[in-house]
Amino acid sequence: MNEDQRSLLLSSSSRFPPPQGVKLSYGTAGFRADASILQSTVYRVGILAALRAVKTQSVIGLMITASHNKVSDNGIKVADPSGGMLSQDWEPFADTLASARDPQQLVQLITEFVENEKITLDGAKSVEILLARDTRPSGESLLEAAKQGISSIIGAVALDMGILTTPTLHWMVRARNKGAKASEMDYFEQLSSSFRCLVDLIPSGSNTRNEADKLVVDGANGVGGEKLEILKKMLSGLVIDVRNSGKQGGVLNEGVGADYVQKEKVAPSGFGSQDVGIRCCSLDGDADRLVYFIVASTSSSKIELVDGDKILSLFAVFIKEQLSILNKKRDVNVNDGYQCCLGIVQTAYANGASTDYLKQLGLEVIFTPTGVKYLHEKAAQYDIGIYFEANGHGTILFSEQFLCWLEAKITEFSDVAKGSEPHKAAMRLLAVTKLINQAVGDALSGMLLVEAILQHMGWSIEKWNELYHDLPSRQLKVKVVDRTAVVTANAETVVAKPPGIQEAINAETAKYPRGRCFIRPSGTEDVIRVYAEASTENAADSLASSVAKLVDQKLGSGTS
Ligand code: 16G
Ligand code: MG
Image 1: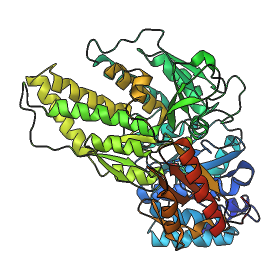
Image 2: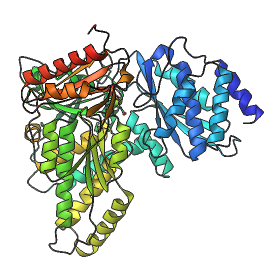
Image 3: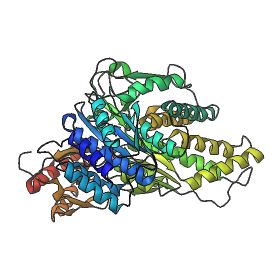
């Protein structure tokens, strides 16, 4: 590192002293904390993003958001050149940087890191970092801190994209690195035109929707609702009513949003008896999670939750159907020996009934630990990989090889079998590859795909929800002295350490018909999470609470 670079880092970092007495660490998907203590960390992640951009000679993204968490929190996520999450092998460096005590130590750590990674900091080639934030009031000053970090690396240029949903920023980073059009308007146009394409390809007779058949969206009082107000004007064939868009004065994620709806299983604020029977969905605070729901009765706020597992199942049914049409030897010989490998990726939180259903369809289902980076990585190993967490975060990934094959097929069909069923199936799949975000789970693009598929199938939300019946489940959390004492294996389904716990969980679980239970340390909170599932609500509740008690006895402070 040359002297100019060194003194630039020393002087800028002296303006961002780390908070005293707190250690922030890179969680499952980035840093998150009370916004008031984040300046220094965000500044340092700005440096990290600039280094990553120099190392990869590509555009990197930085998103200031705390997603579904309370409005006074904030956080920062990094988008890698592919548009996915920051490469896992850089996460330890993120932690190290965040905990540097003073400017000298910070510069020392950076010097060592750039040497090891063979990063040349001569500013010879400039690199770009795209910055965006959600609607949190603290976002503006944190974005400024990130800019200061970025401009502390010679040759790194920060481009402020303003307020965006998290998936839009990831999409932009990916598009820019591919040399494609990458503005927010380009994103909206891609979504609306591919949605239109899918609607135009609906078989005649199956789309029985009328104008009054609307979708009501809970925008979590965040960026998703605000953006959907713009996007919906560009959509034809779908009537959307946005509530909790943040404009009516509601608080971000307070009694609203996908996380609240999924965890509490109640209707968000602003929804009630007038919505019984209507198709409703909720986005989270940065619009990367989506769940649907049906208001169950006029007298209570209870809902029928149509969660990420069911979205995954709907997508799987549709993709499988299109693939089988495409591969049918009928009017033309379309089966050219190419076997498309379709994989489904879930976590231990997936309802057991969803896994059974997917397996019954003959699909390959694999499990990874919780956190999008793990699911995404696995899904990317297939020609078509569909991944979802029960909490509504997921997408469908298509391999380059599959895309090439599909495009070649479409060209071939246009010559010899224009308008045939296989031709239409191929066109639908191509539209899906454009509609569904290839970078990361995206509530807006996922919602449009759900809507297009429901119209295609001619299904109501109730019909969709009947694909299978969820097993009753319960989630609890237990405060423990040290959550890192729990080490899990087999995609978090068994406890490897400390010894004895798994045997005790097994013994409890065996008491309940269709019982399944696991514990895992949270990646975002200082707790151990307990998940239990069984054949009745009471059994799931009882299994969860007895295992929670067990965890508390063995590892807890004895207070919960
Ligand atoms: C983060 C993850 C989410 C995961 C959750 C688990 C991303 C973008 N987000 O929100 O996928 O479900 O953490 O939280 O990866 P937990 O570890 O506290 O249970
Ligand atoms: Mg989120």
